[in-house]
Image (cartoon, rainbow, N blue to C red; front, side, top):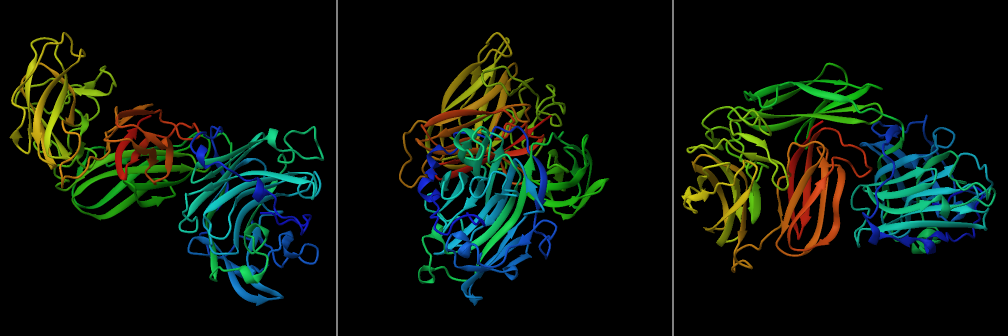
Amino acid sequence: MTHNSICMPTRRLAAVALVLTLAASLGAATPARASWSLLWADEFNGTTLDATAWTPDTGTGCPSLCGWGNAELEYYRSQNVTVSGGNLVITSRAESFSGSNYTSGKITTRGKKTFLYGRIEMRAKLPVGGGMWPAFWMMPQDNVYGGWASSGEIDIMEASNAMTSIAGTLHFGGTSPNNTSSGGSYSMGGGSFAAAYHTYAVEWEPDVMRWYVDDVLFSTKTSAQWYSNAVPANARAPFDQPFYIILNAAVGGYYTGCTSSSCVTATFPQQFLIDYVRVYQDIPNNLPAVAITSPLPGSTLPAGDIVFEATASDSDGTITTVEFWNGTTLLGADTTAPYSFTWAAVPAGCATITAKAIDNLGGVANSTVDLTIGAGCGQIGFSGDAFLLPGRIQAENYDGGGEGIAFHDLDATNNGGLYRPSEGVDIEACTDTGGGFNTGWTNPGEWMEYTVRAQGTGSYTLKARVSSLSGGGKFRVTFGGVDKTGEITVPTTGGWQTWTTVTTTVMLDAGTQVLRFAPTASGFNFNWLEITPNWASAAPGVPALEAVLDPCRPNPFNPSTTISYELPAATTVSLAVYDVSGKVVRTLVAAESVDAGRHEVTWNGRDDAGRAAPAGVYFCRLDAGGATRTQRMTLLK
């Protein structure tokens, strides 16, 4: 967006012709900066514009720069800028005012908030229609290298008309008309950015700038690609001086291809809705610490009101707030110690509660407890849903529900002491390929159950990964209470961590059922079951095979875990890690074509910027072939 008191009305925004479409490179690079801490933000949660940060611009740019140098058609009025409903609202109207046929709004932080380097970010929903031109951009506070564009311009986001693509552009070089530009654009493949809120950001460092939409990197420019004619020996100029922020919604102008009212086709009024503007800088910041002190992990509580209590501290700052979440639902927050929240009238069931501490620089830490409330959930799949077959089921990921419901163990102690220490199933660390855990201390009469969903009726191959120091053992596998395998023998392997695979064939009906793994003779360890179909495609009327996302292993983990998934056919795959608020933490597979079969990806516990993710609950989501699968995982510190 180029509205500058020095630029010439005849300039035709050469940036449009120079924009480089980089959609094909999405996900190919990640930000280099190791940490961003919140420096300043306006969340627009009040009812009036913050006059300490923003100043409305008014008029048409006349007499010195009519049409703001871009043949724009609007008259900017402060009345068109409001704050309501948690948004900054810039409204564009078709109305005659002081010689213009349209009015709109524009605000700047000029002289009030200026920034040199950092991540400058906005979450917004764009207006739409022929002639609309919303923008989020920056200009130098002082033109230390001369008039536009010798002192530079940073366009973080601008779009026009149907809003099917957005652009990020730098303007630099000499004073107009000896200026030039370089930028990139991003498209959703025909979708409109006006249909929903999106996050737009630039990461500005001394020698590089990176542009993002929804944390997807779409353009990168380095100091080798920009310059100022005023100081040719300064490689960082002109982007080495403080800039201020501008938000506006123009009507018409060269960027839209519409410079007269006759070609404006947008339906008015139009609104540019800005949820927030945030500025981060690379300020050293130790992450806070948080711990839920009550109730304790694994507690069983009566239905009704539940009081959560947490401690939180920050070694180099202060705690701004502690939020309390049930899974991905925010229950409430407390801003003063001691931190607590009362969850009222809680019905019987199961809950995963996370306390999320946020410090004064935006650092986050999590603490999580799993709770049973009243009679609990009864038997429930380990991940909250059935394991899809074909697939691999890790032994330790038996259903939730407790003793006598999801498992039966002859003693109440987890003899291995790992993974699910409060339950009686004996779990220890496993050194088989892939690591993770295995069950052991096996006795006849014990059992574990797993809720599964077979995607087709027919013959399946069942493989079990087992080991035995000496003497071997035996087990059966039932489905829906029916013995489908008979007694399977575990051979002697010569070591508790010396593994082999035993195989049999089972006939299964399509649908959800409970698989029970039941030892009939002691003396062996159990790592996993893998169940795959012996038919190439489903019979008529049987649902087609779908992608399968296995629970990660190990889980909980520190610092890394392996995520595996299976594809019945080659397809486009996206795989990402989300935090409890639904924000993408790490993109592991970004819309890539992946062959059929089993695939594994390791998450090292770091986000897309290379920062160590805080301890807490995360969710891994697989999108493949029209199917979406999610698994929960816990990162320990």
